[in-house]
Length: 484
Image 1 (cartoon, rainbow, N blue to C red):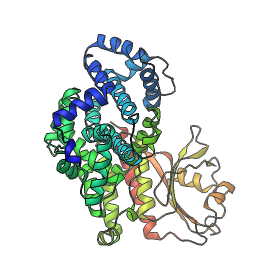
Image 2: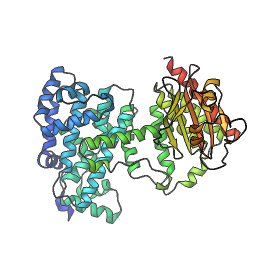
Image 3: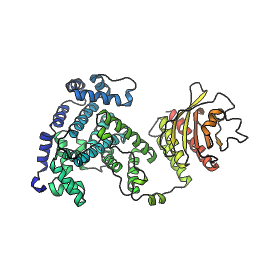
Image 4: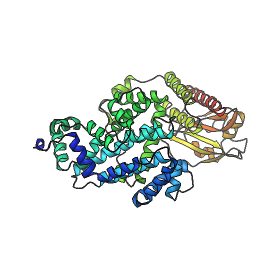
């Protein structure tokens, strides 16, 4: 009987911290000695890491996987520490030791190992998502939010790693009685994972933010909201709720605290997933990176189609939402790429195009080359196309130089037949295309194209008007952010 093995929360904390996962305890205690605001601590921390070959190699791998380091390869621990900062380095060390110790637990049955890896993956992803939700906070706060979100369920994670046969019995009992893991744990063991997390957070000195997030998960502070919502989102991505509406409400709640649109949020989640997978591979945790799922689609929800049908928007409402999203983005971003990608994804979705692309003018202004392209599923695709705009008898050149958008439903039309060169004919093929110039301060930087592939397909005048209107609004937004 499981009841024979009941222990208090304090006993479980002792078992996990001192007997089952002593490497984590030792590392956490050592890291706690290095002050976050002490310059000398950075040198001492680097020396500590150098004595641990596994930590040293892990730190360098992670450092070189972070985009802002550019092309320069980081080859020394001291260099990585200076560039990353002490708070980030401490988080990397603790994350590395957690992953290594938890995954190397002995005598785990396949079912318990599966439960453990799934939980570890969703927890790590929650940390990345939480950090994504506080982009305007300083780096130290972002790191605190990341760590608290990643460790939000460390009590449960540690139990699966250290519970032994008891963990297997608990899992079997939960499946037989169709209860939640948390309910089963409390019924049979008399402990709550939340309390176990608090105890481990105190033992390992993991920070006040984690304890506050556990006590006040729906607090009004953005940091604590982000920790709670990131964990909920990560779980929903791994195991979608029954209804599409419930999932969408969560996205709306997150987009509201981030002051961005749901469309923008989806793109940021996609980027966060890529980052999580890349980082987990840098930690040598490929078993976890395989568990990081993309955003669920409609078929993942048992109640979805009916709800979506109820929320079908008119073309005018979709256009208004797109304008709002671009306008809102001017308050949170100065990255031209974000504006371009948001516009492309909106156009390809709202107009039901097969492809929407941005072609950028080269420095010599003699060619345009593909920069971004989204397919009919609004997913970024690789396209390597270069077209000449050096000849006035060329549709792309005409559109750029005359500052006039164009709708080409028929390559052979008398108006266009003399403006279609070999490159453009190959691009359009047998379909239809609409093209509009992209400008900053009235200076063209390229064009956006909307494409239908099917032979003899037609883009309506109404859709073309919508296309041009949104690109015009994009141009206004790009001009606005260029002046700040």
